[in-house]
Image 1 (cartoon, rainbow, N blue to C red):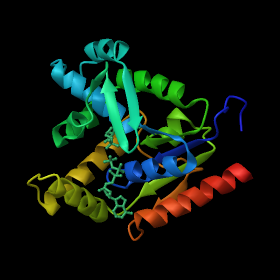
Image 2 (cartoon, rainbow, N blue to C red):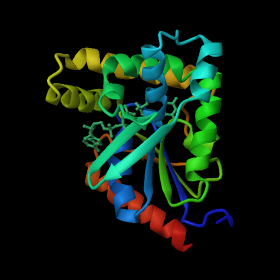
Image 3 (cartoon, rainbow, N blue to C red):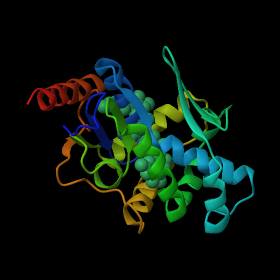
Length: 229
Ligand SMILES: Nc1ncnc2c1ncn2[C@@H]1O[C@H](COP(=O)(O)OP(=O)(O)OP(=O)(O)O)[C@@H](O)[C@H]1O
Ligand SMILES: Nc1ccn([C@@H]2O[C@H](COP(=O)(O)O)[C@@H](O)[C@H]2O)c(=O)n1
């Protein structure tokens, strides 16, 4: 472990939409006493601010300016986990399907990736963190001590997202939800900058037929074994 890691190791959890990254990361961070960094929420926050500012998702000049002045923070109070942008709570607004779709476009822009890369590295460099996203183990922290690539079948991820949206009162069908999951996968995997892919040294975890607890126990055991080694 490098001398910079004064707070513990860095754990990276990458994977496609609906794989369970946020759910698992939140629980694993609690068990390990680590900080949970939801990098997807950071991209969503930029997308929301671009939407509010009338900035087109391919306007790199204005996106560069937006990212230069943006302050993204995570606030934890017990079970509550808030995302703040320039001091304002945007936890709910960043989770809409509309912002999710805009985020897939925004996150493909190099100025946005470069800006958030610096922020994410600053947040995690001392260790004692679990970062979830698409490129943590490949770009943000290629030297992370523990990397997982969490996935599940598109049908299962769509089903999970469908249940989540219906529980929130959204009128969606399972078929269209699966389609949207596959569409976001394709956008994240095919983009030029920091595409979604498994790092060669990432432990693959297919949660299609696993419960959250089974995934969590496997990951906790793996991290503890790596730290003890
Ligand atoms: N192994 C699992 N079995 C059943 N349901 C699961 C499992 N893992 C996660 N879920 C459920 O699937 C839904 C999506 O999970 P989550 O939001 O953690 O995925 P994600 O990978 O962070 O997605 P995104 O990248 O789109 O934010 C949640 O309702 C969560 O409770
Ligand atoms: N490290 C990351 C994390 C996310 N993205 C993009 O943001 C979108 C939303 O992420 P969620 O995890 O909140 O669903 C995602 O679809 C990616 O386009 C990214 O590029 N890099």
